[in-house]
Length: 356
Image (cartoon, rainbow, N blue to C red; front, side, top):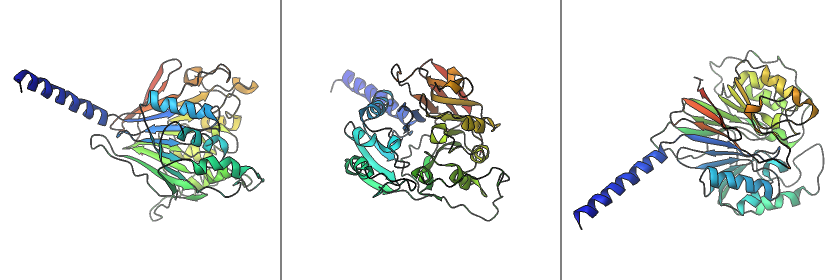
């Protein structure tokens, strides 16, 4: 082999090695896909694994939007883990059509119900609605139990990443009782009548990268939120809170929000769904919150009172004109800070991770 060719090959190998190292040393990315008031939160770990929490509504619109963010923005070819928080159509409906667009690895959920999981009403058509989800092609399926940890790869070049299930099917992660101090907020907010819908069964996930912590509880409801943090706070504080249930009044108990004390909240709401006065009041009751992001502007008549700053809203128009911008969060490889990015206007804001 000619010396010049040897040098060229060596240089190429070194360059390739540098590129691999750079890829492994990237941090954690989270995308809030616009599914018009449903839920779809896409996570990409430092090792390049993908986690999709919920898949939006039935039909092709939301599946196409998730696929576009996953492939064109995140550079993914597969969804490694799909977590379905509960069996309402705006959370599981897009999974089957998405599976036609890209491979799905392991699915985590509460177990596919054999009848409508909403105990307060009957829906004979539920079995037909859930059939595409049940029969879609995936690598494996797992029933979530609180305390389970997702089997994520580590790079060895970044802080440790983990995702722990802290609630599922109205059960909660166990914590050591000895030496644990009772949450002083216990009993400070009245309970509501029992919610019999499947929302209360929602799977709740705590994502961490070193000190950084992000909480996604699906549509967990008022009384279940209280049980998660009282009389003992089972999860401690977090940096970023995905506003439960799109910002609806049946969720977002001030007990939860004040106990977890987030720095940033992100609401995956619709143009008329979510952003309720009680949810906004609960968010504002927490002195810790520095910024409140929304996927959509609330276009109802109460929008003057119940919206965050336009700079922090990804989509301002109604669905007919909506460009479906996805909010993005990038967490540094060492977990020490994180940046929220609004692609609609280029707004960026970086926050320092707190000690928890």
